Image (tube, rainbow, N blue to C red; front, side, top):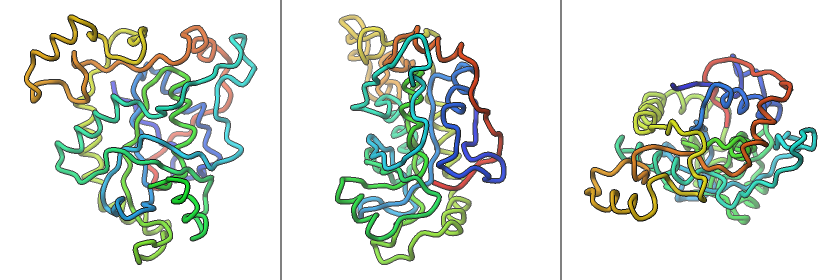
Length: 279
């Protein structure tokens, strides 16, 4: 099953700082989703992040405020949960996205730090420079808190980022405007959809709800699993470094805490809609 949800709603009505991220991720979880691939238009902050290319972020810098960014806010009987976040994006899903991009012949950066601003306005030159100094390579308005909320529900999360612009124009190009982002997204739509379809085709989600109960490793690891993977030619191994070909999401939160979230009354609603173009 593949589910699609437009974070900005039909007609691009919801600004990034007002998206009900918790409702969106909970809705996906309720459908049985275990792996979330986010599609995002981003700006490139440094020369290595070229316009009209792709990136698969591995880190984020949160520069937002006022967003509800946890399910475990003290209102549930399971109490506060402290999410491990050293690797905020799922490493296995990131490798799978990289494999999909390679199969499509796309130019991409296999890792990057994405800075997330509140929006809806774009950055000033001073703000953009400060983000680069802090270590950011890309800039977005929506890549927080989606990764951590997905992880709090034990769903995998990775982002297929398409670089539409150079933000404030560090490379001499014109500074970003919404019309520019939408125009370049429309031109790249066939490529973006091809990558997402390739990723979906590579992803076989495990039927086991739990998966990595012994740390962050695919089932089949250990002596027997290692031999099976090692005996297979590299070209025949599953995409995304999954030894048995099945994706299993990291289990970072106790299952009983996740169940408490899913059994609690729904707060907020999910807005339906078309594919949106903002960051």
